[in-house]
Amino acid sequence: MLAGQDYGLTARATYEKLIDLCRDNPEVLDPLRYLREREVVHFQSR
Image 1 (tube, rainbow, N blue to C red):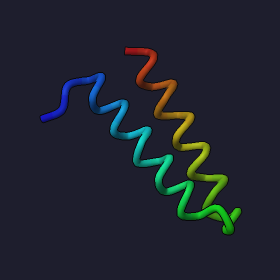
Image 2 (tube, rainbow, N blue to C red):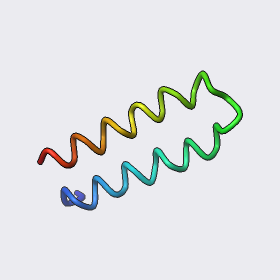
Image 3 (tube, one colour):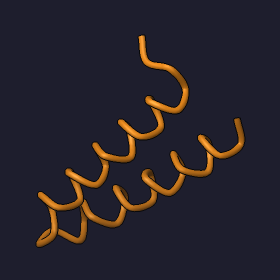
């Protein structure tokens, strides 16, 4: 199981990779950006 900080970094890295893969598809890119930001805010509130 990942520690809290490791989980936050892993989640962010996953969103970054998905965003990189979907650069040409704004229908996917916008929700991914939203979810990444939400994850960052969630992680910071811990």
